[in-house]
Structure formats: structure tokens, C-alpha cells
Amino acid sequence: VVTGASVTGITSSTVADVTTLLVTNTATTVLTNPTVALSDTGSAAAVDAIVNKTTGIVTGAVTADTATALAAALTHASATDALTLTLTAATQAADKITALDALTSVAIVASPATKITGTADEVSSVLTAVGAGTVGALKAGVAIDVSAGTTTAAQLKAIEAATTGFVDASAVTAISSSTIADAKLVLVTKNGSSLDKISHKSDVTVALTDTTAVATDLSAIGNATTGTVTVSNAAAISG
Image (tube, rainbow, N blue to C red; front, side, top):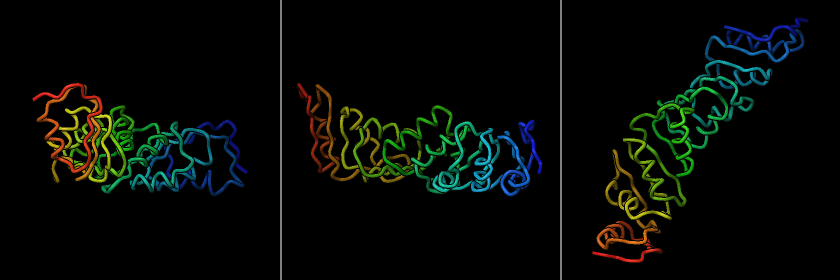
């Protein structure tokens, strides 16, 4: 039996060697929660098996994969581990990207992702993480699909501004608590079906919060949807 009560760290070691030491030979090797620094890239499953054998910080690179696959495999990693997680050039689920963000202290390499999907809140959480530096910069022209639900025009405006790619918001059924300026930008000015534009559902409902309104702006918003446009707080309409 190899014991190492005084061994506090394993450095510059391959995934295969550390796996043999900590995972495979548990009957003959006893180390007390050492830190581990991996010298090569390992699969998410292999790295997670190592993480599961120590409460010490594990540092290393994980083979690139989708956010969904990585999050499913790394069930024992935590925010204290220093894992380099890289997304593949594929469609990525926004909620899984933020899930990965909680599994490492290293910024997620998100630039290869070609599309991000999720609710407006989930996509916004990714953008917040990018701003905080815990998720790396997105691809400049990454496409974004916003799934069904209710959101605000301000939230859609921020999502659209985060990419030069196309934002498909055609599944959103209601735009609530929005200013006329934001609603007009999303539904009229930036409306489109490709490139640096954003789409919307043809009958999306819109709830506006302004206390004053210009008739031409309301007309433009009204013409952009067959859904109900509500100006609940409008005290005066001019023009």
C-alpha cells in the first residue's frame, strides 16, 4: 500500500497516470485529498472521476464538447476547480453554459459556439457572465434563438446588441413592461430575418409602460404585430 499523508499535491501529471493513482488503484494508493495539476487534456468523464477522488483543487483541460454534454459529465466539479472548459462549434444551450460556469474558476471558452438557445432570461444570464468575465467572449456573429415565453423589449434589445448574428425571437409570445422606444427598436427598426437583425412572432402581444406616447410610434408598433398592443399608463398621446 502506498500512502501519502504528507503529499498535498500531484503536479504536471497526465490524466492516465492520475487516473491510475487515484481512481484505479484505490486499494493500494491512499492520498488525502491532494491538489492535482493535469499536464494533458482529458475527457470530461475521466477528469470528473479524478475530481471525485479529492477535495483538493483539480487544474486541467477538458476535451471540448457541447455545454450539455460537459455539464452532464462533470457532476463532481465545483467552482474551486480550475478546469478549462471549451465549447464546440455547435448549438449550445444557454442554461447549460451557466451551469458550467459554476463548475470551474476558469472562464468558459465560448467563442467556438455557433448558436445559443434558451429563454430570454437564460440567454441574458450568459451575457451577464460574459460581462463578468466568467464566460469568455462569444463569437462575434453567434446566432441566438430565444425560446417561448414572456420577456421585455429591453431584454431583447440587449440580446440583439450582443451579437452581429441573427436573433430569432419568433417563439416569444409576449413582450411586457416595455418602453415605446425599446419596443419600436425591437419590432420595427431592427426587425428582420437574417444577419444583424431580430425577428418576432407575428402576433406577439406588447405591453407598453410610457406615460406619454407619440401616435406615429404607436402606429409603427401596432403595424408590426397582429397581437394586442396595450398602453396601460399612457396619460397623453400626441401627433
